[in-house]
Length: 72
Image (cartoon, rainbow, N blue to C red; front, side):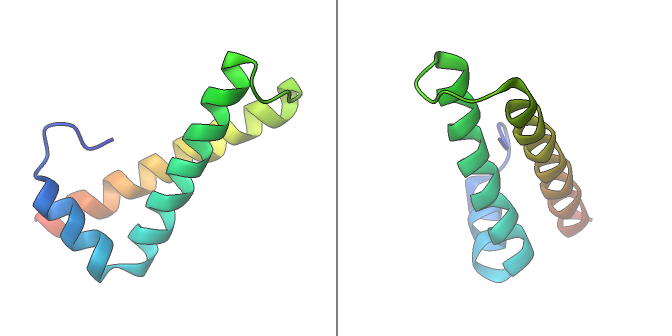
């Protein structure tokens, strides 16, 4: 998710920021579910898949903002 960013910085945030850690884990969970649904491994209706994608995107946006704030 943070391609091109220092893994050390991401790991430090995961250790020090509970909100970042929670959002990061939730994003990973959603990413896995969405991928499984798109591959047909996890049968799910389109409405639920759409909600998961939206929640995943919102989590990524928040993670990106938190990461950017800590770098300034």
